[in-house]
Amino acid sequence: MFKKILIANRGEIALRIIRTCKEMGIKTVAVYSTADKDSLPVRFADEAVCIGPPSSSESYLKISNIIAAAEITNADAIHPGYGFLSENAKFSKICEEHGIKFIGASAEMIDKMGDKASAKETMLKAKVPCVPGSAGILKNLADGQKTALKIKYPVMLKATAGGGGKGMRLIWKEENFEDAWNSARAESKAAFGNDGMYLEKFIQEPRHIEIQIASDQYGNHCHMSERDCSIQRRHQKLVEETPSPFMTPDLRKKMGEAAIKAAKAAKYEGVGTVEFLVDKNRDFYFMEMNTRIQVEHTITEEVINFDLIREQIKIASGHKISGKNYEPQMHAIQCRINAEDPYNNYRPSPGKIGHYNEPGGHGIRIDSHVYSGYTISPYYDSMIAKLITVAQTREEAITKMERALEEYYVEGVKTTIPFHRQLMKNKDFREGNFNTGFMDTFELKPE
Ligand code: MV4
Image (cartoon, rainbow, N blue to C red; front, top):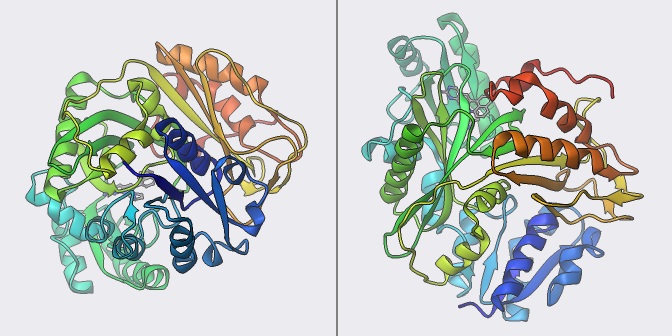
């Protein structure tokens, strides 16, 4: 087992990783930018190293500084958390070259799964269900137009280097193809330095349902049931839950098996997530594979009673898994509490928190790095807490969430708490009647 892990991240996930390391008897090194010098990860880690100024590109993304911090503290592994360098192939490779275990995917895996057309090719070969579309990258405009006619409009044009909706275009009819082609390619070239495009049939009103998996270094794989992440806004998840209200035992079995097929085909190692689109008829299609621990791993932990960070660290150090799958035993919901103004287009609301009161009691979990007097920096993402409720049924988990949100008080900054309070009372949400288009029509009322 590792003796000392450097956490190449900040905020709640840095704290989350430090907590598990402590329970495992592993020493921890926090790295921090000058903006985070008073943060809880810095206070709770065994050692802390400043790696630069507030700007992420000069600190949490600065590979040379992070490797230097690992060398001087003699860390034998690096946990990247999510975001930042967690899916950076170059960083994974440099860690390996320095004899430091990267707790995440290999550079080859990150490259293979990060290129969406290549990931899809791997999945098609393995007979994982995929959205009908082009066979790999489109050769040119004419190839795109021809393929679109073959699979029939509406179609989705997607950037192979994409993610989070960047370089993606929905095209309803042939006459709009050329403009979409040109603008998507330009956008993708600018964002990723890659303008490779592929095409898919447009799936209308899909749900976003993802399967948590774990794979060890010996070819054993298991799935840990699903998370429904359909409540999103501009590709930012707001609420996640498990089980999905749309799930059936049959669909869970099929999607779990497909996710394992995906992991096997990729020769995956570590904990990961296979994302699917699920349509009205409960047909499902591979979207992408995430090779990191995700923000929403918490709800899976709650329903299978299992520490996923601990498992991730154990697998990275060579631990064997049994290969048995996990079934959800409870219902869990997570609301992302962001320092954003839901009444002002979710504009970030950084600043100093005055009084801060977290909810508590049975079935409530809060993963957060903030406290009374904490200053939320404008440099990083605006999530200040993950509020998770766990109960026997979905109804009880919602009731608990309503109660918890009533107790939650954050003075000094705007938060998404009013949005979550109203969502919990929304008829369609309560009936499990929602898909990825939900936020397009949701109207926030004055409080
Ligand atoms: C799609 C789709 C419909 N049909 N692909 C959005 C981000 C990227 N990861 C994939 N996305 C989508 N791909 C086909 N063929 C609809 C979306 C989509 C979406 C997917 C998941 C969660 C939220 C979404 C919001 C808008 C569009």
